[in-house]
Image (cartoon, rainbow over all chains, first blue to last red; front, top):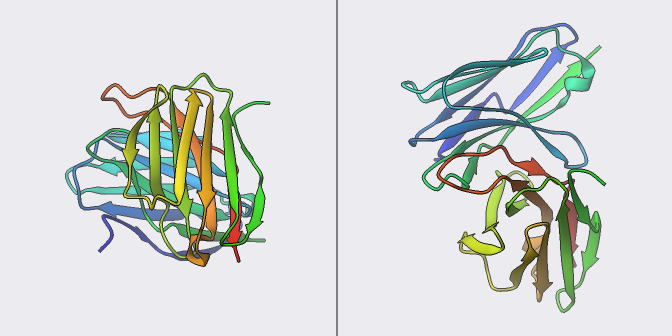
Length: 109
Length: 115
């Protein structure tokens, strides 16, 4: 079993829908990261959080340390949000990230 | 150039070839990373360098040889690879490590195919 589990693996939504992607982890962490990977490979860091909630534009990330769970929400989704969203955790040595397998999101018109 | 750049973007090599991947960061960071992304698998950390010193080798086979001549440049030397080494190789950088976690900035990756 992977230390970082994401759900769903694939998600299709219509433009404007509210989207939630979940991440559960089984180890103690120093921080949790949400990353976005577009076709072609480039990865962009969306959030790094260790408690509470962060918001950037239409994206919101929350984390519950006690439950070892994080969610990434996208409000008013748009086709340009189509990408793979990856959850990763920093454990032990701060530099070492352990990744989930990603959630492939497709937003259609 | 800004951010993290990687060259080449695509590479096809035979199992007996020797090639190198290059990564350069223009962010003033002290830590640099190599990751491997194979199809249907999570990203895997390969190597970490902090202030030019290797601080992490995630049990990577010796046919992958990293080099970090300074905090801005990172190389991955490849020799006698296997077809299963075909993957996307991503470089990242972050501020230095001092017990705190820093956000990592990724390059666009090199798509490697071993024939």
